[in-house]
Image (cartoon, rainbow, N blue to C red; front, side, top):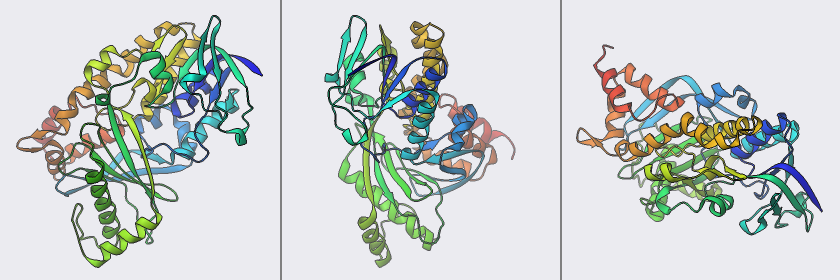
Length: 411
């Protein structure tokens, strides 16, 4: 069996599904391939910035949680409580991705629950031929099925098989690591949203409550990744998080050996579900050299390397790259895709890449993240800048200057 489409999109995460919806609404015949096992979620905090929610308000219809308060922790454990002028949202990636995929299907895209590997991709005179691996027959796959299309789109994540085949693999130095656990909500119902910068490490930990569980995780660079030490640090973070629900005086990053901490750890080990993934974090030179499109193909989202090198946040860039790509295709100007995304958000991502070491480096004799939170605890202007940073409205390039200017203004 074979079918012919205008566009074949491999990967049904935010980038692939959003592009499929936009293309289908514009009249294109689209095939969208979701090769993830049923119930498998990407390793991701699931945070969607206020910037994304303002750009696409319908995202709030997905089942999730809106957040207007955030606890930021310095590497020392000092806390800053932020009340956000612009709330962001937290989603289970299973719920969020399913919502976007269903919108694509409802718009007219055909969804196939089929894993497409590099060996199943073949360039033909008329375009592309895809063959499935038949690993998901319970979801409707049929042995021997083939799909043909004029255009091939890779939206299959940071380890994209399509990206490796068409644009070449990203080096380890252009990758970051995210891993964590899904755990039960605290019994007292109090579950604050937390971002904590790591003591002695590049990166941060998070606690993002969702409707039925908490997503804990750590994001760091590939070169800084040491699994055993960071896993121990994450467990300390999780235990301290639950201890603080019972004892507000308990400090973060406190290596407590008290009996209650041991009890919490035992309870978590019996319930926690682990997850892990890689995230793109391109170096400045890679932004200059990386190709995301060519004759009859294009890459979107993580597959193209579109993620913030400082935080690893990629959902906004996944959606925006999909939107830019769909617009270029429907206008018959696909060759303009590369120029458009570089003009839209490419410069900011490249500058963020240049700022990554400075953001996690020293500032006036201490980690910049430590100084940033220390100054903000007593200054509303600096708190507003940090709120804009969380919202996705504040970039990194002028962050230190803006913080300094805010500090000099009267309260």
